Length: 227
Image (tube, helix red, strand yellow):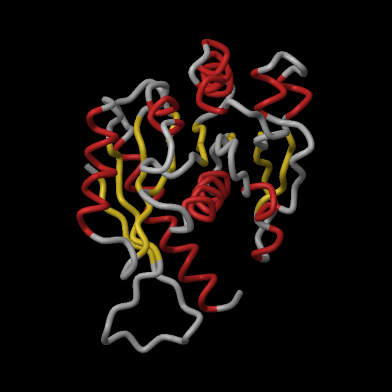
């Protein structure tokens, strides 16, 4: 396995361990992964975190609730033909929309199963759809059958969707791109979550490069802290 992949795997094992501690006494094991701004790496973090939990033996459901700009399916090489929007509009049953993904083979590991629920066809009113009782029931049903539900949510400062989703979760992980996202913007995102009574479970610092580290140009580092 390439060194950079080994390092990324180890980084997400640390994030996974920190999250497990943060959620140890929480009944609802639904985690929202978001960012302050678009393109900070929240989707790749969602996918990698879900895969890390699956490789550790957990029953995992990864849900793409970014109904405006869904992208998890591309990283998983899955499809987005049906998904969350179909379930919330009562077009399909959730069992018909769940995709069963094998995790680990691409990393030269023994493959393990993971459930994936794509965003599905685009809708004109994502926030309204995510505020319905059907959305809360969907997450409750997924959590009942899984050890952890990881949600790829929209950037928290761009739209209201994530604040609606956060009400049904144990808490949120905030992804921050090192060297790009200003500290005041990060604080605004944190404050928006906490004002919404969404517990901040951790912060993942994406694309962090220590100044004195001797690494290749393509290396990516992740840091995490929980609270």
